[in-house]
Image (cartoon, rainbow, N blue to C red):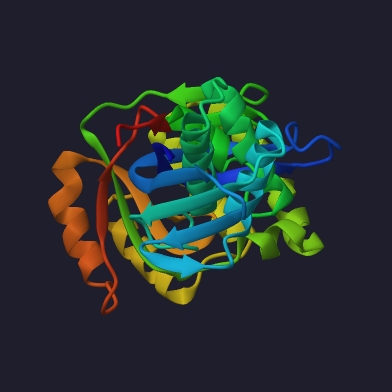
Amino acid sequence: MKTGKAFSPGHITGFFQICDDSENPLWKGSRGAGVTVERGVTTAVEITQTSTPSIQIRINGHSTTSAQVSERVVSSFLKLVGDKPYKISVQHEIRLPIGCGFGISGSGALSLALALNEGFELGLSRLKASQIAHIAEVECKTGLGSVIAETYGGIEIRVKPGGPGIGEIQTLPFNERHVVFSLPFGPLSTAKFLTNEEDRRRINELGGELTDALLCQPTISNLLIFSRQFAEHIQLLTERVKRLILEAEEAGIICSTAIFGENVFSIIPKDQIQEADAIFRRHLPERQELMIMEIDAQGARVIDG
């Protein structure tokens, strides 16, 4: 039996422009901006050569038959290793709420691709393995820019669309004083926004313009201000999200909502944590978690078993 294990951080997108005209999924992607967070997906794989091939995928210990992106990644690797039958066990451990704008499908695909590359001993470069994850997410319509952002980490502007090695990223400066505040109320469907023509039109009316504006003035404050403008423009703000954003704004804390999730976030210096914590907790629903996370500057990586 061969094994592999990898971690990919989660990612919050603040705004973006859809760039999916290319016939090649590797060249499809998005321009935009966001932040990569310390929590994410750890994926472990066990690979056994067998007479009866099978794939088993577990998420946080529970078997699933609806992990479409993960299945696509496994299928891509099986094509690379030839005709030998394998039993493949995939264990995803997810430390973020699913569907709330944390780029979990991208994190799962990316950590899986790196773990399979390790387990099969293929020797693909980190970029080549990451490209397989990007293609799987694009083809499954679960995201366009999360994988490249999670590959590199940090606070990024996605300058040119495409997967890792094709797209281009510019990093915004930050330091250990900054943390990401997040209150996820609930999930939203990424696929709905990427396939609905009216939603796509609204996204592209403003997403590219805001990306260009942030490139001219690349600051964390502008990222948050532009993210708020974008969320309002595409009509993403629910009433409870608006209430929290407005109260935080009165205290001088700029917030927006993650794309795509009903999830208020901000990037703040640590000396504002106490004040932000008090405001966010007044809006915290039962059984929901207020998250204070470091920014992940490393990006996705193989880890020891």
